[in-house]
Length: 66
Image 1 (cartoon, rainbow, N blue to C red):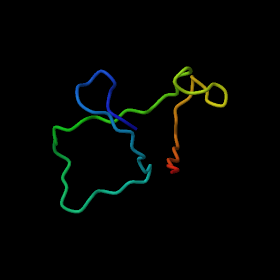
Image 2 (cartoon, rainbow, N blue to C red):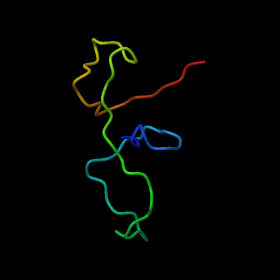
Image 3 (cartoon, one colour):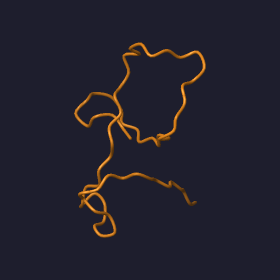
Image 4 (cartoon, one colour):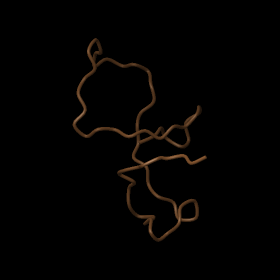
């Protein structure tokens, strides 16, 4: 997930657990933070196929080689 592409500020893609639990000490009030949005593949930025421009990206594996 990530913030809305039209909102100001840096963008970071994060994985969100569908069975997430509340962090100790948190509350349900407004934290004035970014809302999270699903990420959709964009052909051209990603190779289609194997990606499909009509589907959400539900999993990511990141690695770096030197």
